[in-house]
Image (cartoon, rainbow, N blue to C red; front, side):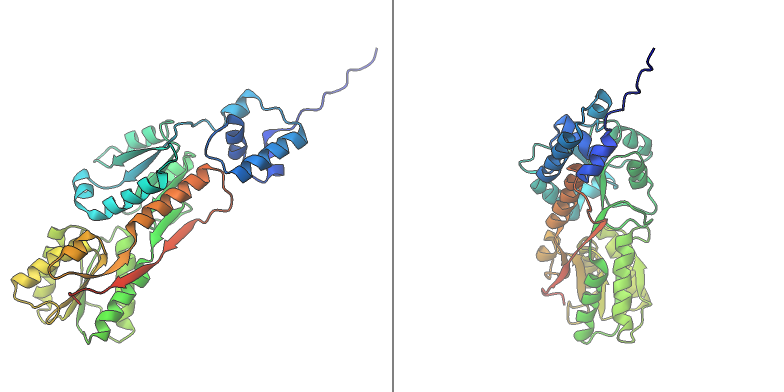
Length: 339
């Protein structure tokens, strides 16, 4: 009696991925006929399948799993704040523009108190293929939780907690640095700042740029008041600065929306802008050009911000390899009447 010969197992999905030079999830997406795959990756996978004689089984066909044809835009703020701040409208326009013609739906989610677990459960429950997360505070665990659950995400703004989650940000440090250099070039020596929240990287990065700009010229960095990104908070911060230094001659405000409140307080107190106090904001939102006087500000391209985030997420969903972990977008000064 002859012994039966052991049958050699066929090639596995890991081998196809190795030969094609892509990830296992990309192989599975090609097998499933999903849209989120570049033509180059698709051809590489098909060549590897033919070369190895690979026959996909049911498990491989279901590995990628998600076919929602939808992504989420998660804004970690209350709805009232989102609707009042032009920053979010600009980012949303960019996201929408990048999705145009792709047949991918956009789900908008705004944080409410104590809803974190429900939010995570929904996002990881197959309703969306990936998420864009904007306006993080502190060491918010949401990006890490979603990342560890296998949901592709891109964060808008440098996460304060660091980590390996992909993010897109504007060059907040150098934008603020250039704003201060402008003020110093105008002969201003007592330059205050209304800084953003301490629990947001955007606030701390802009504060660092302000400090560096003053330190370059040996000027004091003591006139700092932290605030929230609202006109009301900006007004309160300006009141505090004037109590501490009524003779200040310039103020860098970390967001246009806060600068509106600061301008209102200065004018109510009889300060002439820019003769007595020069004011520079940040964002170049629609608020800057319609302010009285029109606001000199640091421009970040909010629509490009949203487009870049969306491109980065879709590229990952398409199986693109060697994508950058972080992308920093340039800023520029826009001169108007306030400085």
